[in-house]
Image (cartoon, rainbow over all chains, first blue to last red; front, top):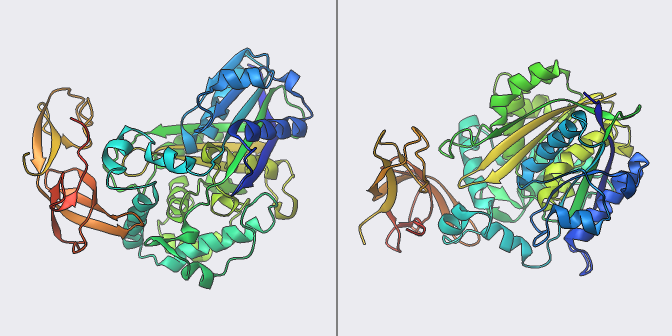
Length: 374
Length: 94
């Protein structure tokens, strides 16, 4: 088996209101160029391509390969949104390990000109067009408002508890030049924010941005690369018939820790998929970081000092469509390679989660990757 | 139009599911009858910009996402409807 490692990462700057000349293709191209430059490689070195994007249509991965001038021996396209980053990384690592290709670009991102995001969320899947959009319901905010109410009630939480997540992630974002919201956020501002779908208010919801993320996976990587120790995926663990407060990650985490040869207590860094603060808490618990299950105590004891979502997360950096599934991986790779600037933490071992694909009531897909600096 | 929300009732294990899928999520059976859920318990409610959206535990079992009338309160029984007379649950195409 060939050794595979992540040798480069890049992010095309996230923008709330991009210019008219910014397209899905332009942000994916920019992110790819940045990851290649980071790895000291060029487009001519690439022989594998993985891409996830909601807005690349009518083009697909093969069109992108042609337009980027790539000569490929391996290609894939992923449609799993917030779970696509880890899913693609896994496929890429295994393809390199099997000797099918040596240098894989892993890309994800989207451009949302006016109206395009609404089109995406109201036409997300058949369950949405047939059973949710007619309510009317425009996107997942109300569904996660209901889920957050269940979590509030179950764990005796208050809005201010979720505020601790938004405020802390914003303080990380202050040191991330790529985050769209960097100004400090106070708990008073959090609590006084405009309601979206109570208990969700403005700072509980990710800002939709145009942007893209990229990783480069290479065979026989030299020093300074990041290795995937283990990963796992869970799809549809409960037929959407549960409360959504536990994700599929809870079911796979024990075996992933076993394959990785470490546990949640060994982590230096965690990047969890933060579409809403309630999902941050759910996934941290699913990983095993809240052993007694007391989310409130965790927030008031461990949260402040835990290096988690150090880019500011999607809540402050922005959610670039399918790019959100790669965002946490890019931040973890930057941290593990010592490239995180003023927000750099000392880290050798990181866990990254993906979550998403709302089928009817909440996300149906969860995955987990354990990364290590080598 | 019969009253309530049409849901799939598995002929093999009698697990009722919604939205309708081609395979029973419990026993993987593929033959179904239809039950109509006319009422349910409103478990959570939120006021989104576009509508009052709630999670309703239907009397037939499935949790459904519904648009609620102005007077509906969490913790109360609501009438489920594919029209305007109660908590609206789009039943989708037949």
